[in-house]
Length: 269
Ligand code: NAD
Picture (cartoon, rainbow, N blue to C red):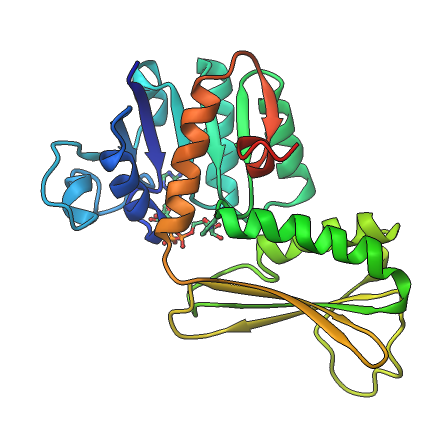
């Protein structure tokens, strides 16, 4: 059966790719394309913005009014907007796929509350390769243990507004859990000045911003006499869009509420 999909942030960098990915999917109908209230793009054709030509779906700014016609909302916007959208979706029983990054603890608690009412897939990175990388670094940290220093490096385009990336933060959580450490206590973000010797129980994060880099992540395990690196490089946002669309199909077919991520969608749990 056709699933009716809404996209929040449909005029954004990810939103335009999502419009293309939903439109190309045989089981999905793009039922709403939402943009920030007051945006001059409200009223534009979502397909034209995505470079597909007109598809007859205009950008609107009222999620509540659109909810009656939606099975799943895919949200790649800003943390505050995602939280507002989550409240509306849980009131209307609309499932969610959330890709927005940079949420604080209280905002994550709102997502958790939403997932007690409706099914939610929430992931900082919807690429299959990054999801697999999370498994690989977990295995590496478990085997290599405290004898190796761990550093997470990420590079993104100049427009990215949060750092470290949501993916790097998730990598940090996975590494800390595998090493039995508290990430809040052991994370070191950038280094400057007289830092002293490296504390072997820290996990370092370095963020590079510039140009049009879609998203590169490397986790380095630095030991005595050897070094291991796990690297993922995204060269197209379509990889995230297709993963989000795959998640939308998965959550639409699942009964009941719950909080899931891309590992659940790929059947890795
Ligand atoms: P962007 O700034 O290009 O797009 C965000 C869009 O959301 C903008 O068009 C903005 O006007 C719109 N918006 C803001 N408030 C809104 C509201 N209330 N309702 C509807 N639309 C609203 O940013 P982007 O590069 O597309 O990234 C968006 C988010 O997705 C960021 O948090 C980014 O880190 C994240 N992201 C996640 C993944 C993933 O795989 N999870 C991949 C890439 C980007």
